Length: 136
Image (spheres, rainbow, N blue to C red):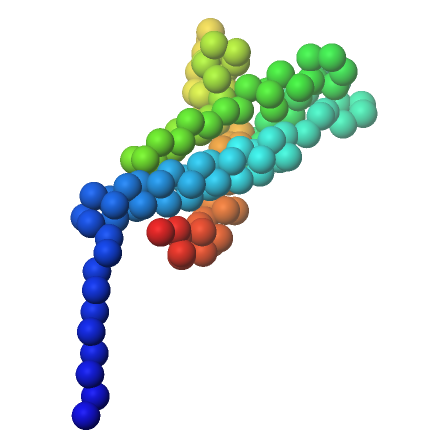
């Protein structure tokens, strides 16, 4: 004869809290990974390029020297239990990064698309499902 006894010690509330904490950790780690990838894709301008921006279709390029870190330092993320928001801080970069990311006209100047955030997301998608495993 074979006997089996099961005891459940977790309440639905404890399970909900554990799921929210696991989701928050996963979202926060994913957002941090995307931010790091986006920051490393932003490069300084190459010697002899002068004030030329990066090539269309590639990530933005920054000025070298003291002001060159402005774009990299303005990438932030905010994770919460329902998801995460990541991108350039509008108060620091204005709307210029939106024009570069998607391609737009600002002040009569046409900016070709120089996506930075979306390619960083694509490069990290494959590893996200692994981060969700064992999150609870």
